[in-house]
Image (cartoon, rainbow, N blue to C red; front, side):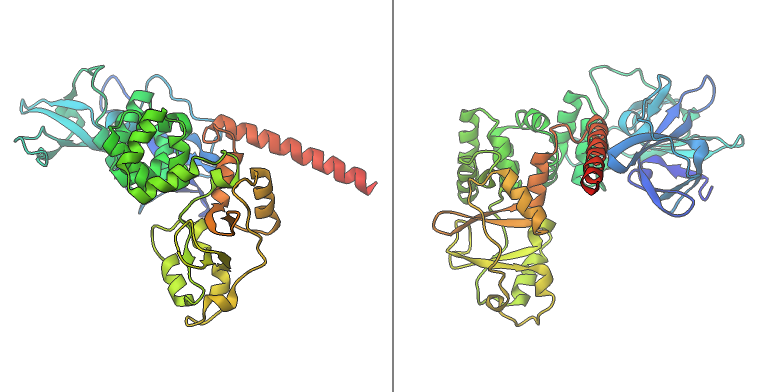
Length: 436
């Protein structure tokens, strides 16, 4: 092993590689098994592989841990993970548990733990990173930290009313992408999921809500007070916020809209008037919009902004004033790749793509995904009857609605694979018959 001691929380999100150096997945958790004597030993890693499938990798198949990566023997059982009764997940279950220090100095909470190779070549818990209860009434006060060996503490009886610290789980999720946090939340019981979600900061929660299924979105938003819910909806992409609000009771929807920024609320009211599976129901109202006399340099500066989603950064839409939806008359689009071929001072008017046909708000989703596929596009402009740009439909908006509601679950991935295989067989037979 390249490391003889590892703190588990630092492993979360680390890449898992085969002996050839190819990445096969990433670490989600570490599993421990309690023993009659001595500290618990690590039995293996919970690893997420392609398709968001979670599998168990026995510790015996780990050849190296260190420098932010895990190396395996290359042999991975791709059957879905199933936790055994004697096993416990460190991240999901142990962090946040209370222990009693045997020196009589009181209670502390587990914030992390180290596993280390012992004399029997086992990976076993060697050290706990603990935090004592805070002293003082200040909300910013935190208790002192200390290290202790497993033999120096005794676990407190678990109070069924007291779960793992939500803040501790969030600290573990800090380096994960919103989609991965959403996936982790779906692993938790409903009440626990809501509790952890409520502890996320507003921007993080807005990003995570966009990645969650509709039912879980509603469970979380219903537990938030109106002011915080309005702030989070304000931070979400307009199309995602509109989809969520369309499923709330009418009275709550109106109350939230009243609390939101006036322009954002107006966008959402407009989006909610369109049918769900149309361009209007799918589009975002925040594309990158420029004037015809803007330069390539100015357009590129807008694309570089961190908050711009990749699908929206692929194109700049050119209109007459005003330059916010609903805009002035739509003139055309300039694709990012084309801008790279021209000098910074070039005016957008000279490199416009005017052949890309915009769609109307009532265009059905079937027409949209064919247009995106036929012309290899990532975004389509949506215009009203007067040819004013009202929004843009991006490929990720279409994918979200084409996939089944439970596409984030492993069962739906298995079903999709099965359907794709059947479709491939049918296509092959059809092609063979045509050749004959």
